[in-house]
Each structure stands twice: as structure tokens, then as C-alpha cells.
Length: 273
Length: 330
Ligand SMILES: Cc1cc2nc3c(=O)[nH]c(=O)nc-3n(C[C@H](O)[C@H](O)[C@H](O)COP(=O)(O)OP(=O)(O)OC[C@H]3O[C@@H](n4cnc5c(N)ncnc54)[C@H](O)[C@@H]3O)c2cc1C
Image (cartoon, rainbow over all chains, first blue to last red):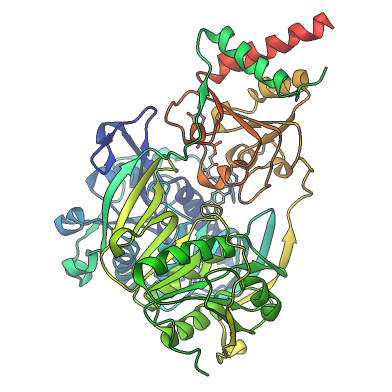
């Protein structure tokens, strides 16, 4: 059985960042694995392990397991990809070229790129994070499922795949502390929620000299052209969110600021005594 | 059966409900839809799929809504039923803009519908500008730290609306209610909803006097003592953001946010919480919000009435001391 996990290297805004044009000034961005994808990777590796464990059982479908990751991102992202290789992913693919670099990737563009890779890999299960913390689309996984014509489930925090690889039982985390229990036919795309499992630390093995090379694909390798990453969206402005709530800041040394908060809480009448 | 062609050029919004109740975002989508109609022309139509659609349709007859299409397929949300239904309604109505909710169920079908209909998808709108007939969508990125405006240079397109971002529309309207039928072969669906489960018992803190909310900034379980002590000396109740709960440091019943609780205390004191949309949406109606965070650009300050920019490991102990003083005075 094969699991494909889509992982993204995300940019995080550093404290007190500055804006340059319609984006955060690059000097104020730090890069790392998307928080949600960490859980998608862990989920994928665990499902594969479960099939590995069942390998003794002669009837188990797909006793040969493989977890493959796919990333859309520049060379810099290989550092992040190495961390997922060190967390139990067997093989990694990175999609990038000059046309992709020049594009503003929207949901449809990501869908086309990932669908082309999925078509090559033919996985039984595809996992993504619920969202990427930088783009906050929260859409690519489900869009990908539709493009591939397979089933899906969004915001999943528990997965059980049956031995015959026919279906998965999932828990979907809804609002307000309610979960939905569903069953989807496989293959399927699941978007994984944070907190769903306990992600393992990276093991040093994946980083060693014997580490697998990261396979690279450009648009042409995937049978696509620059049209695949064109977008009808154009960013026109960027600002720090401002809902017009005016904030009073307490100044002074630590004790003065603490006293400011303490006085406020007393004035509001919310402290005991 | 035809749903009528009057919405052509207009807006179709698919409302959200769960377990017998329309979710607020439905009425927020009406507000968004009305402003879109101003830009693209045509009518504002709503669709309500599954459940008690007639009762829902009556409630949805609010100002600015021209028609409500009811599709009585099943009781609860199923993404395959929704996707098939919305696709059929879209084909019939040919709206310029298809609006769907940014709720967890929206996340589970809106991207599939957009892809199927080949519509560009702008997800998570928090505001819209429709000056001069061009639509610009405002959304948040980088963990809600940056707000960007995005021009949509193609119609038709699809849009999802973030929960709680738009005001609700509630004045009674004059909408026409039209049943719409779609043939869905339930037995051929690739997904089945088996049931629901409540996760833990929520503690009732919704209208507490003082909530002390701790976020990932606390760093480790051992450090929790600090905020527990603050809760003790102030008589406040400890709650937490999601990562703190996911780490197992605070029980799930005390999680504030989209997948946890909605709260509206007199004072919400946020300690080391950045203020992501899924958190803020469920606490911003607190009477007074106070935030302590070392990052001056943390979006929590955007909803805070009072703020302290600083290291919580200095500020919180100093604050505890302020009240410990009280204890000895008493
Ligand atoms: C479908 C979905 C549902 C979700 N549901 C919820 C939910 O119910 N509740 C929820 O909270 N989140 C929810 N989230 C997650 C949400 O997007 C954020 O990831 C989360 O709220 C972040 O929590 P945080 O602010 O504690 O952590 P972070 O964003 O990591 O913020 C930590 C803050 O601590 C500050 N800090 C660090 N060290 C210090 C220090 N020494 N002194 C002072 N400040 C410090 C940092 O500057 C930062 O602002 C959900 C997400 C999704 C996609």
C-alpha cells in the first residue's frame, strides 16, 4: 500500500515584522514545515506501519508499504523535506521550476500540480494538512480529491484504514467540541487536523550520507505547461489587520505594567476579594 | 425541475446548518451576498440543503434575499450530496459568484465544488470591496498576521466566508421559496456519515467574570504553574488555546476557539496567545480583552482593549505579586 503526503514549507512572520509592497518583507520571514503537515506525515507513517505489522498475515492487501511526500517549493524547501524523510517518509518529490516560481499559486494551480504527481504515484491514501499556516487556503486537499475523482474527508483527527484497503473510517472535528464519524471509500484524500496524533521527533538516519535524493519535477515532467499555474487572482494590498479596536498599552517597567493590569482587573470588578 | 433563471448574473449562497440549527454564518453570508450583488448585479439567491429545509427557508427569508432554494435530501450534511446538489443548482442558476461557508463543513465540500465547476476559489473572506463593480476579497494569511486584498480578475468565481467576519442580516424579507429537486443516488455515494460524538463535557465558562487564557507562549507544562497561580490569586478560571490542549497540558473542555468553546466573559486575559482566526472568532465578544504577548504584531492586539507587550515570564509573576499583596493586606 502506498501513502502520498503533501507537505508544504511555510513562511512564518517573525515578531514585529514589516511589510514590503503587498507581502511581508522577506527579511521578516522564517521557514519551516507547516504545522498541520507534521500531523499528516505522522498519520501517514502510522497507517503504513500498521500495514507493515500486518505483513505476516499473508492475506493483508498491500503488505509492501511506502510513504511518499510531495512538496511544491523552491530548493530552500529541501531542508524541510529532509525533516519529513527523518520522520519516516520513504521517498520525497519536489515540484518546482521557473514558471512555477514566477506564478502566484492559487488552489487550482496547486491542485493541478499535485494531481499530476498523484496520477504518477497512484497512492491508496493521500494526506494533506487542513491548511497551510501561511496561505490559509484550507482547500487544496479537497480540491485535489475532486480533480482525481476520488473520495475525501476534511479536518480529520482519527483514521482507521481497513485491511482490504477498501475504505477508511474517520473522525472529522466539527465546531464546538463535536466530531462526525464517517466512512469514505479508498483511495481518498484526507486533510489532517493538528493534535490528532503525537508526531515523532526526526530520527537522524534520514539525514545521513545514504539519504535518498529528493526527486525533482517541473511542469514539463508532469505533462503540464505554464497555463497550469496561471491565476485570476491578483494581490493588490497588504496591511496589518485593524478592526478599529483601540488598544491601550500599559507602559513602564514590569511592575508598573503589572500594576496597570491589576488596577484594570479591580476596576472591572472581576477579581475575588 | 428548474430553479428559475432570475439569479443569472447574481449571487448564489449555500447556507450552513447542523443538527437542526442554522449556523450564524448563514446570515453573515447574506450580508456578504448583498454586497456582492451590488457589484455584479442580479439577484441574491440562497440554497439550503438537507434537514428541515422548509423551516430553515422561513428563517432565511431576510432582507435582500430574492429566493431560497430548498433541497430536501437527507437530514445532515454529507459532502457528496452537497457537492452534487450545488453543482446542479449552479448549472441551473448560472450565478456570477457562488458563496459557501468557511465552516468545517464548508472546508469539506466548497473546494470540491469549485474544482468541479472550474471556478477560481477565494477562500476565507473576512471583508469584500465592490467599488466600481470590481470585486476585491480581503483575507488573512500568515496565521492571521497579515491582511491582504485580492482582486478577482475573472467571473464567475467561488468564495468562502470566514465564520464571524461579516455582520448578520436579520430583518424580514420577501424571498420566494422554491423547492429544487436533485436526483442523488444515496446508495452510490462514496462517503457515509455514521454519527456524531460530543468530545468531553464542556465546563460552563461562557459568561465567567474573568477568564485567564493561556497559549503556546507558555512553552511547557511546568510553566503552567505560573498562570494557575494567577488564576488562584484573582479567582479567575483557566482556559487555553488549542496547542496547549493538544499537548495535553490543559483538558479539552477548557479549549477556547472554533473546535472548542465560545466564550464571552467580562474580562478575557490572553497570555501568550497570538490570536489566530479560529481562536479570536470565539472570544472577541468578551466585554474587555487584555493581552500579554511579547510580539507587538501579534493579531491578538487587534482585538485587545488593553495590551502589555512583554515577556510573560516577567509580567505574569509581577501580576501575581500585585494580588498576593492583596492577600496579605486582607
Ligand atoms: C479547523 C481549525 C480549528 C481550530 N480550532 C482552534 C480552537 O478551537 N482553538 C484555538 O485556540 N485554535 C484553533 N485552531 C488553531 C489556530 O489556527 C492556531 O494555530 C492556534 O490558535 C494558535 O494558538 P496560540 O495562539 O496559543 O499559539 P501561537 O500562534 O504559537 O502563539 C503563541 C504566542 O505566544 C507568544 N509568546 C511566545 N513566548 C512568549 C513569551 N515568553 N512571553 C510572551 N509571549 C510569548 C508569541 O509571540 C505568540 O504570539 C484551529 C485551526 C483550524 C484550522
